Length: 282
Image 1 (cartoon, rainbow, N blue to C red):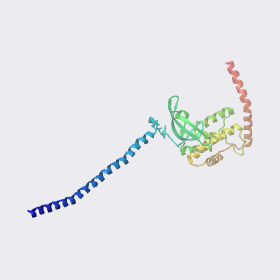
Image 2 (tube, one colour):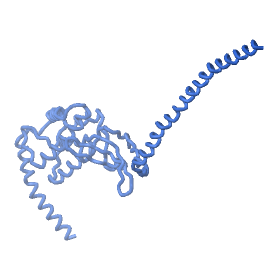
Image 3 (cartoon, rainbow, N blue to C red):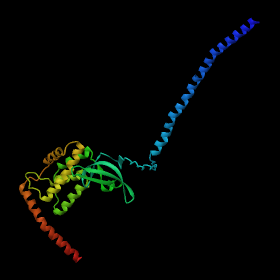
Image 4 (tube, helix red, strand yellow):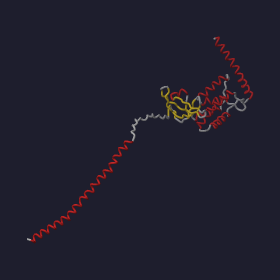
């Protein structure tokens, strides 16, 4: 019996010692479990100021009212016209009242509520720009450049004999102006031929000189454009053809014609006076 009690006492002490050894280990575990629990509040405290700062920053920004969106105005595209009535842009044409010009563009304009198509014609030498309705081309007599065969015919006309009518100068001047403004290259060549004066002939009067230079300018411009040469070269060619024509070489005859021309003024006044008297008598 004493041995059993001693064994039980030894077992009891041994169990206490093992319990004492296990107890510290079990007591050391809770601190390890508490450490991750303590990190959670730290994260909350750091995130809380950021969340609170955002509304504060948003509250400080001024509220701007949204602007109404205005649609951009529609721009109507203009039609680019390049050809009308058989005429094209950048083409040289003959306008009877002004001579040779170049079509710069064909544009549309609204005049008195109606839309019109216009040829924009530039006359470089005259420093003038003219706008002609495309529908009025036939009425104004605008035409294309003469072909080389017609230009050759005009140059042949210059070699012919001058035809001067025995009428008053005022009537002849009107006829010459009508031929110049007709736009007919052959008719213009006839004016140049009839008004030309060689060195052996008396000088032209002021009105004759004006008409001669106007006709020579119209003729030389068209010949230069058709032959792709300069106006100076065209004038030389014209004068060369005029030199071949049979002229009134006798100075006596030329002087007689000059005296007759000076007397035409008096005859004109007398004829006009007689005409008025006849009208009144009728």
